[in-house]
Image 1 (cartoon, rainbow, N blue to C red):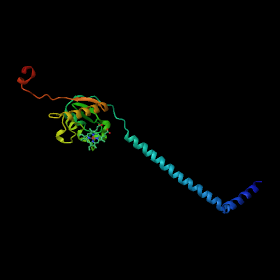
Image 2: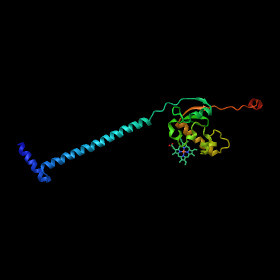
Image 3: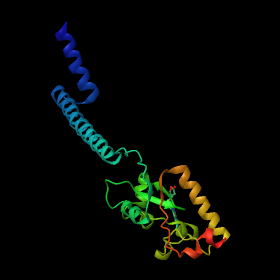
Amino acid sequence: MAIELWETLKESITVYTGLSTATFFTVIALGLALYYVVSEFFSSSSSQAQYQRSRASEEEVQPLPPPVQLGEITEEELRGYDGADPDKPLLMAIKSQIYDVSQSRMFYGPGGPYALFAGKDASRALAKMSFEDSDLTSDLTGLGVFELEALQDWEYKFMSKYVKVGTIKKTVPVTDKSTTPETAL
Ligand code: HEM
């Protein structure tokens, strides 16, 4: 019975494919081997890619430490938070309010397009939409109403996006006793 079946199969193979039985099975075996090799190649390269992707995302998505409240600090101290030290938070101030902008290291970190604002109160620069060094100050003297409005918009943006971590300590200029408010009145 089995032999009959085998003979019929051999005959059909020759009739339908025009190949001898040996050639037919060799072609099938080669096809399977090729399929195995190709699928093995793709699955190993994709799992390698997955591994690399997961490693890359592990490196990129390091959770940021929670913002640390600093209270009042001087402008001088603020400069130490310009992102040069990756272990310190990245800070920036608007209108003497200091914000932790560490989450936007790509903007304010070293080499970023707005790195010049890091560690500074850049109110004047933001109000004037200026990148001039001389505008990297909290001094708003002589600014117009539109510039002050622009600054206000920046402040709202920062308030909603970043955590406020402190304020800039105002350095009180030493003045003559005769010009103090009490005596002036
Ligand atoms: C050609 C002119 C400019 C272009 C095309 C531009 C483009 C951009 C873009 C695409 C962003 C990212 C916005 C986001 O994803 O939230 C951005 C952010 C910002 N831009 Fe500009 N900008 C320009 C000029 C300026 C100027 C003149 C200033 C100030 C002097 C400025 C200050 C900022 C700041 C501070 C941020 C970051 C805000 C944040 O922390 O979310 N930009 N800008």
